[in-house]
Image (cartoon, rainbow, N blue to C red; front, side, top):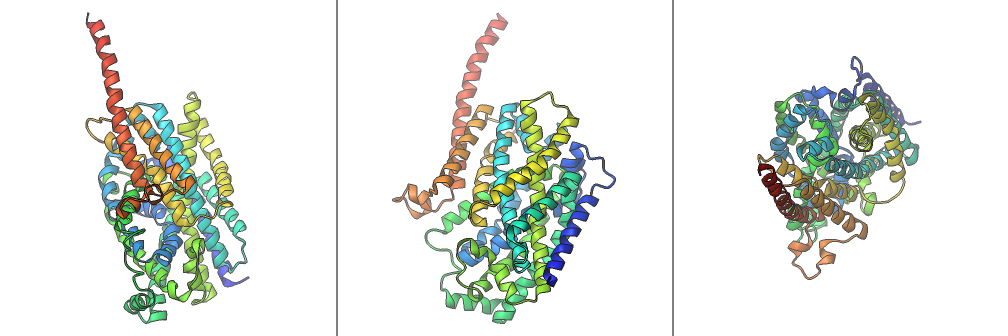
Length: 492
């Protein structure tokens, strides 16, 4: 047994301890378990929200994207991602607190006075969450297997990771995620800052020489191409990420655990500081391009580990593996927690409304291991890269943004029928494009590259919004035409 496995094993044990210890002194009613009775302050909110946003994609997928894509990888620095929640999260939190809402589905159902709409949002949320959980588990199996030098098989690694998540989510709920996120953030910062600084200096003598060598070896690699990953693609993918980020049910749910609106605004103002870390992730990927060439497809997600293993001693690979496994476990725990809450509160109770709150809390915990098993099943099938999985899931949750944005207006022009039909159309388009591997370029081969390079998520949300408003106009007129004769009859 090498030193790397010992360090990884100790980190796993510490994660379980922190996750279980987090419930001490708390009575785990559903509101406490799911949103900590809305009592998290600015610091905890920061590590919690950073914990789910900066996950295995940042740790492996971003360095892999830099390895594959080069310059276009700058899309991960989308500033809009933090501007939008600064304005929308406080009113969402305020409304949720006033009406004692625990989930995203609760919010939509209450805003549009429609339980079927809430059910639709719940279904879309769970469907979107599964690929995101799979993303974390795929990252986990890469991290543990690579960091153990292959001594821990990938399938065993995934089983271990899912058992850890299941245990501390079942026992401590969101408290376990928050406590573990603190340890994860510390380790991730240390590892990424070190690797992003050390590797370029070790191989090239500095950051600037790294860029100069890379440009000389691969001219144009650091530029945005005229077609494909072009400016048009960049703008559309940034919109997809910015508008979709807080449409994730777990992000939405985590924001409801805040103590007040001020904590939410502070969090969105400070979170961009974390973007500094992403710069060092790119340095790791760019260094790996020349030092570990010929990584193709999903193998490019191994870039960080490949270059680290040929440069650093086993014990430090164990530290890297520990940071990476926590980067998978924290968001995975939030995803499982949120999905379990949605399944019980917004789907099961929609079918059986007479279910008591006590039974609902029990059912929520029962759904945790069930979801874990379902996620494991999907993890063992499919060979998509982490980037593909993430962008597909983003495009799904993105379809929830138009009706949410309009619901925050003083006079909402969108009807529940309009919101429902728009979301169904948007999600159906994303599903069609994903299943058939269609792109705007394949659908419109004669169109300008500006159209061909658009991300499908933005195209789907545009059509979604148009359909939503069109149906809303029609249904509001129908309601008015029915209401007016009734009022005339009453008055007469």
